[in-house]
Amino acid sequence: MAKNIPAVSMIVPCYNAENFIQRGISSIIHQTCPDWELILVDDGSTDSTAAICQRATAEDERVHFVRQKNQGVSAARNRGLDMAKGQYVMFMDSDDYVNPDILAFTLKEAAKYDADIVMVGHNRVEKDGNIHSDSSHWSDTENSDKIKEDILLNRLPNFVWGKLYKKSLWDDIRLPVGQVMEDLYIMPEVFYRAGQVILRKEPYYYYSHENEHSIMSEAGTHYIRRKYDHFLAWKNHEKIADHYNNNGAAFFCAQKSMRSIIRALSLDAGVNALSEAEKIYGRTYIRECRVPLPFLTCVVRDVLLSNHTGLLHFMGKAQRMLIERQQKRRARR
Picture: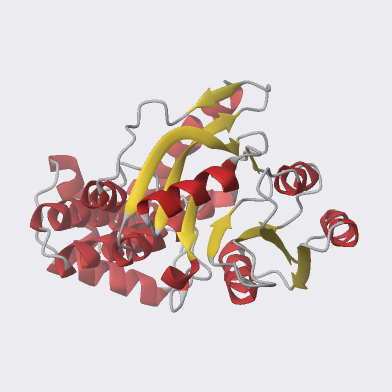
């Protein structure tokens, strides 16, 4: 590598992560490959996260730190991409950590296969300390077309982390700010831009479930937003499938888009978590998209399009109550 140009820029968005961020920082500092820079982007934390990050910059010159007002994880990752100097980039979430060999291994695989993306497996770390492999059923492969289609159809997880990317893939791509499902939205764009892609199931990344919180907030508005952003993400997948003339994938993605927007709009009835423009956009998609759906989904679709306010509000309230009960049962378990 040229002088002052690290092999890898590791980008970590941080927000109120004081209980976990030091573990993640340490997992980078102790990499067996020393040729990296760590970019910590604090997204307006109100706890001691910033102080922990600043201390790391004083202890290792390869660690860089910047603060910004709270704009969300996508804006923080985008800021990291703007700062990155490495030939490759890798993302890590602030409550996660990585195997000390992740950089050495992925760089070696990238060089061996002249790969633009090296995707590795991950373990899931639970609150009770148990660690489970989520990638043990994967198959190691250098079949780029298969990997890309599996990302497009979400048969492989669309997490932005756990992957080594050639930085040039991100030259004019940034994560959508304000969306909850930003990973799902952007991953096919990045993968389909790549040439050679390889997959290794060995779990070099540790994904934390220790800090999991309910996806339900007051009145279920966060859940509604997630469903609407699912719709936007799958609609983008559909567009990419169309561009590459993959009719089977486009049909699958359209079905996912339809189910997500029908769910979002029906849950939103009587709550109005979505803007009027979003509701119009969603209803327009429902009217124009022609894919077969299960009978009950078709019933909900027809009620939405009829705009029967009383029935919509009753249906939305019933669905929100059902989801809230499901969430409470999961929390108790």
